[in-house]
Length: 187
Image: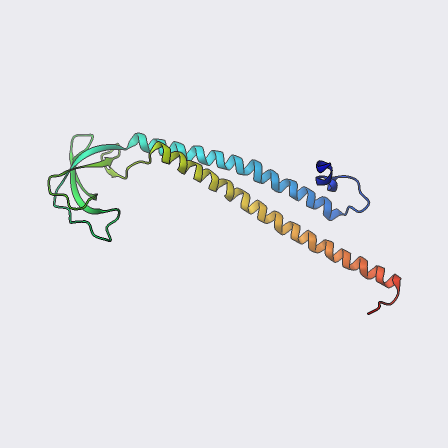
């Protein structure tokens, strides 16, 4: 019974107008784009994000570094209780490197800190953990699905609004014709 009600626009019906058929096709097309296109975009994006984050985890490595100066004490404006200070570490090729990075405030010169480097020995941010990477990949996939679905739903809503306006204009014309045949209106 429900399926019959939902598909009434597809059946032969003397009251069915051309706008009803167009609206049915537009609704079908919008839902195909939303379901199929959104799913494909979400899955592809989630897999691409998961692969990128896995590559990051594989290419970044923790290494011991030495603090080259006393780190100032933590202040209220410090990011996560960390301050920027100079450190020295050994790159994969055996050379000694120096750069600025965030370290915990209040540490003394010569303290050992853990920094992350890429395969070339450059400092890099700590990679995302597997669990957090899965969450991020899922969020990217969901966002991609919404980015595909939103324009399709918006275009469908605009098209349906225009069809409704056309239907209302036809009804007005038909009522006007009917009114002429009925005689004068009463107040």
